Amino acid sequence: MKPAIPLVLSLAFGLSACAVGPDFKTPDAPATKTYISEQEILTQDQRVQLGQQIAVEWWTLFGSHELDGLIRRAIAENHGMSAARETLAQAQAAVSAERGSLLPQASLDALAGRQKYGVALFGPSNFFIPPFTYYEAGPAFSWTIDLFGGGQRRVERQQALTDYQQQELGALYVALTGNVVSQSIELAAVQSQIDAAQEVVRTDEKLLAMTRAAQDAGAATRMDVLNAQSRLAADRAKLPELKQRYSQSTHMLAVLVGQSPGDWTAPHLNLNQLRVPSSLPVSLPSELVHKRPDILAAEANLHAASATIGIATANQYPTLTLSADMFQEALTPSRLFYGASNAWALAGGLSVPVFNGGTLSAQKKEAEHAYQAALSQYQQTVVRAFGQVADALTALSHDDEALKAMNESESVAQAALDVARKRQEAGSSGLLDIELARRSYALARLQRLEAQTRQLLDVTQLFVALGGSPTDKHRVSASSP
Image (cartoon, rainbow, N blue to C red; front, top):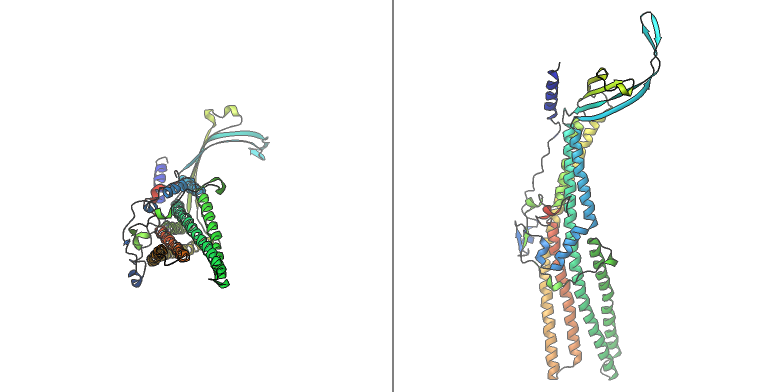
């Protein structure tokens, strides 16, 4: 009988190598080669390099050491990132736990009990066996053989869920870096806009004073004074909103770097020192689906759903459990380890589903529908990602048009101010003309700053929509920030 034991174990191992249910296959990449229509391609920003990959962390292309420092601090100290790393580590431990459950299990057991039998018949006489205490100690082994791969599918599902958490961490990394860049740009832009708006207000105040003086001299009317007062009030009203935006950006940056706003001071960021990259590498749609974290997370979720079908399928098949016990048994603890106390037991149990009210078949259908839902969610995630890239690309082309127009407007206003100054020096115009020209120039500068800010933010959104830098995956892990 002993040679049969290795044969049984070998057979069990062989059968456990099989796994019922579908094997997961990554969905095919979309056939489309562009993100926008042919008509939109004609106006596309010429800096866009389709089919190229960025080789560095994308935010370094803005050329700001202060911004780079904020990014590093946010990655290291953001509490959301810390929580996501721990969640990933938890999922990785769960994979090890699932793998361990497939192996034979062993334990060292000890038992003490008290027992009483009924009447014992020995020959013609009946004997009563009095209650007695007994003791047992020894190792126990059990193994539920994974005949049809349900256990393997459980490991596969948990690994897919771990991959999902890995990609969720990657998506958080992309969102965090994008938010830090966006808020940094906003902070620098609002400070510049506040300076320009204050210059407009100062000019309004001078114009109002001049208009009142002209009214006193009979050269201006009451309506001229009211118009000057109206301009001043309207321009002053813009300052509180700009200052609130500055405070909000400061507070948001503090939160992103894991600090309380009251305990943190934002670094000085100069908008004019943030340069727009000379080229914008944009990966192809077929490459984006293998790079963007939220798409990869949806793929991992689809993989987990596929493995769940295999688990539900395996549950419809028989299960085989082997057990072995080797123990010492005695009526007193002192005799537990005598040779005469040796005992052992071997057992094999087979369980075949016969009737369960349709539960197992319904669970399989449930898993199949869940897979189809996950597939639709994956496809929707892909097209949503393409839409975000398309929005960023078209926004950049429109930003170039707007910024070109605002730069021209600012140049014209600067030229008008220069002419007014020369005329004043020549005695052909007064200070009123200079202040009016200065106000027009400050307003043009304010509009140019808004267009410049919009362009920088849209460049940021493009890189975020593309899934960040290809080196991101090396910087995001469960063990290190």
